[in-house]
Length: 91
Image 1 (cartoon, rainbow, N blue to C red):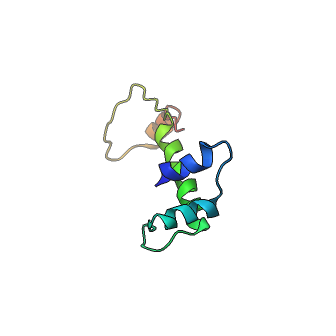
Image 2: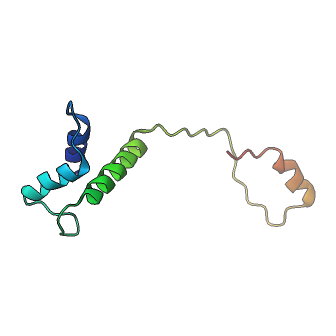
Image 3: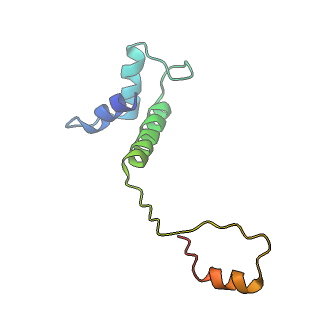
């Protein structure tokens, strides 16, 4: 549904408004995911959430992992905690 709405909004010389898109979809007998007729707010919501999803799926996440060692320490001393605190880097 998002691809269809985006096509109407972005791929025309003159973009079609939300109200007109809802009239087109209702004219074709399509229903919202909840089974009601489309209104302009439904179209806007689908379009907006689709853009957010597309951005999230296409972004390149940056993950940097350096050498690390996992070690369990039962009762760490204050000196140990202080010595490790400087070596830990949290983004």
